[in-house]
Length: 275
Image: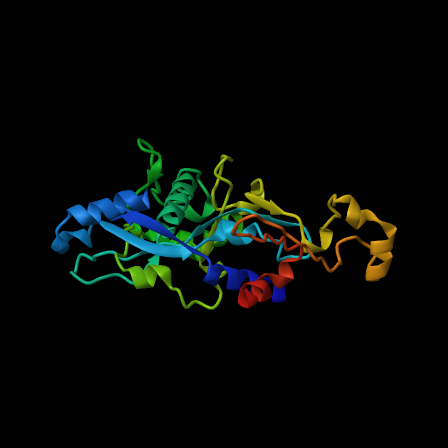
């Protein structure tokens, strides 16, 4: 829709710098810059990665949508790539798959130790550690007959193999600046203030709430704007559609800054283009 087009355009136009360490940990950008300045060129690219990502909080704070909107916790996806035992590199994947695998592994272990009919006759549970035994047949049965239950409970398909979570140290690929719909590059999580499964955003409290642009309310204005004469002269039922002429007298040269509040999210792009 047009509203999402405006939101995606905002995400394209507004980006912020972030820094990740090689292990995927977030770090202050200034501290990372200091590390880069103090490290020799041969190793600096392997220690920290500074790049830009869409400023989701700035854009979600703007009333692009007509109705009231609520957003769960969103994070810009990180890309990972692992070194395989054969010396080759894995396919590039979303680093969030590491967490998704952990959730799946815990679910699978409970299944193995719950005497489900599908695993009957198979020694599926290591009762000492309460985990699945290392029988490859177990995974085949779960993927073939039981994986639909997991997908229904968690709203995603788990990775087929365990990802290692090695951050891809490539600025261009992490940024993906030219993506047409940047909102698609964000993962939706449960609010960090809530406990439970992060992969169930529908069970969480909203992270950001925003009144719709169609729900704007009249704000108090100076007495001049409240006069019935001005309201009737404008032809509008409110008091804010008035041409204004201001005269400022000064004894010396001054700088004047004009602040304009936009009350309708539809016009942000046009305003930015004009000014």
